[in-house]
Image (cartoon, rainbow, N blue to C red; front, side, top):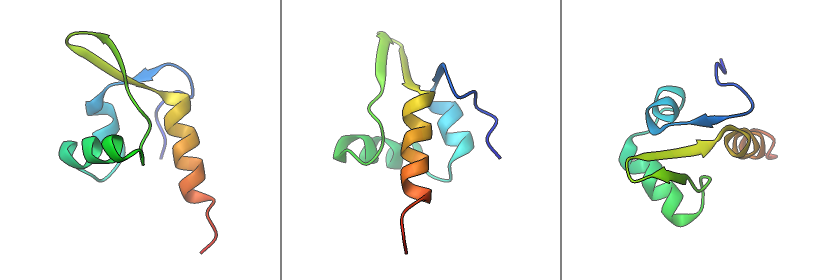
Length: 65
């Protein structure tokens, strides 16, 4: 179930609570371009746009088999 708002931002912990992969896998996916790029808001704050995550998820779930 999606408890994330469709707008705003998610931190890494939010993404890892939502999807069944590790932090290392998340960053590998970001590096190879198969997950949305994050935004660096400050030296210690990295976020992802929820709209980017929703678009990514929709593209993955609407693929033909």
